[in-house]
Image (tube, rainbow, N blue to C red; front, side, top):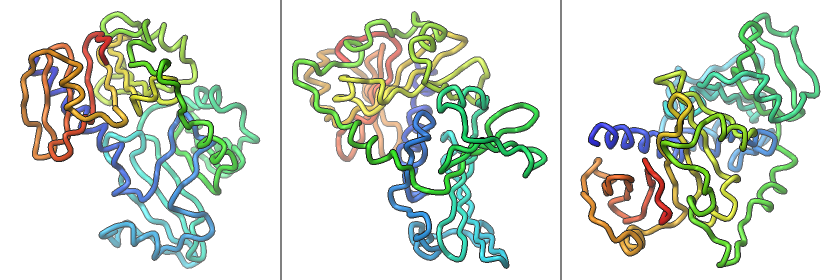
Length: 307
């Protein structure tokens, strides 16, 4: 159990880094499932200046700022190692934000992205000897010519669909229809659910490759949560060699005191670090913020209808 517990602690801390990556990049980052509706919230194409952008950081090393004679400035940023992006390049033309490029850290076939986002308006195969560019009006996806693996996602302007998407994502669920995760997804269970069955039911979900093993993959459910979205922001599912091994639930607003009322069961309490503590219930683990006493993450190794 200690090995599993340590593994989950690492995974949780990495996922927390994704959720709180704003201190490195001063805005939200694209969700791979919704590239067509992504729009920066704090940055504005054609308006945000280099100086204003730099103020979002305590210090950007001079080595990460490239200035060219044609009025172009490029700033390189390193997102958390756990993120789906391993590098962000921000381009300015004549001191105004011109483009944002996100380098993918996971191996995703361009055919998979095209199956999700539809056919591009055109494919540029001539401007780069190594890459092809799949254009989607206000952004493009580059692909390695030989392996057909997606390399970068670059945005040039704001998505015209973003505001509509924000409105549609608001949850107004009647009290009688609010459901916990396993009430909503009765057919999902660690140790039983096969990845092939899950992928067939959710064909638009893009798996993230586990860096430790090519046989492992991770899926993030958000919009798919439906009426379970009242309780959770996200559910992260990890499959190892085609079998679901654990589920990580990220609650919206859950005090640990509420968990203790619902889960009338013995637990072991341990420190993770100076910020988080761990409640070990044997078949699941709860990570709690020490300061706020709010639940940050619930890791499940088996089914529990209370969660």
